[in-house]
Image 1 (tube, rainbow, N blue to C red):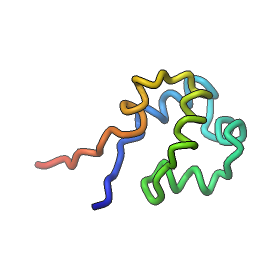
Image 2 (cartoon, one colour):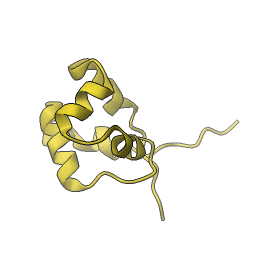
Image 3 (cartoon, rainbow, N blue to C red):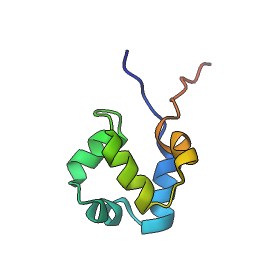
Image 4 (spheres, one colour):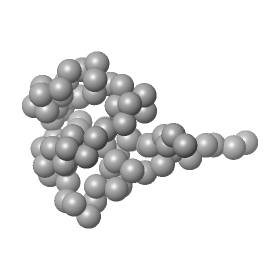
Length: 77
């Protein structure tokens, strides 16, 4: 089963702390393409990437699930 995660809170934190995704990706030492695939649910983040991003974004361990593991909810009409 493939999960899709809602990264909207993560995107907001990136903008708040680094002004742009591009600035953050440079600091993270990851290519824009790789990061884009992850943030768009094409490839999952691995645990070491999550720990590094959490440190850069000053996200506490107990908040990680809010940023990285919030499942997308399908909107019904």
